[in-house]
Image: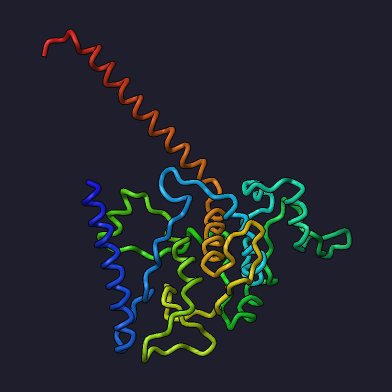
Length: 285
């Protein structure tokens, strides 16, 4: 069985690579484009599989990358500051972190809106006052909210890879896509591929050959306190894991409950079988 699954995995990788190369060739020849040109690389995540868990240190680094880089353009309007306790932060640390942000509140006694420092019950605010302002500041393309981005993004994996995914319970398409996208800016576009003005080529982008977002990460851009590598690959990996947590903060509880339910069903099936044997033992067949 393991040998069969391994063959399926290899076949899926080969087909994925062939599809990516074929897409690039069609682009160069002026044929029908298929995106992404290159499929995301399947990475190794601590939260993968039925027993996977989040790496709190990685999530804290990912939060730092989001705060210092991504939050300049992307909001997380569905994530409250108080949920950062899941990352290992104390109440005092969360209050201090939230106070670094400013939110709009009101109306006050005079009927006017006002700004105040954020508190733990507030959500991560948007860097722009509205959708139109966000689009105007980014060449007409408003940056998406990051609250559920790791669950909302993911490239469809063709046959036979999706069959193999059933056995491995693969559900990391979002983080894989985000990591590949953030590290994919150094690829050169194929000859003859037209890149629009103000856009940036990225073969992992699922909606076209280029996107409005420029390369956001560079080596040494964010300082880590735990000695982790300060590289684009590490930044991309950490922020992808953090966004997965933001999209599914109760994943570990869900997996633990699922395991408990499976154990219960196995024991219950055994009791039913034993009861059946007891009831029908003396009945002639």
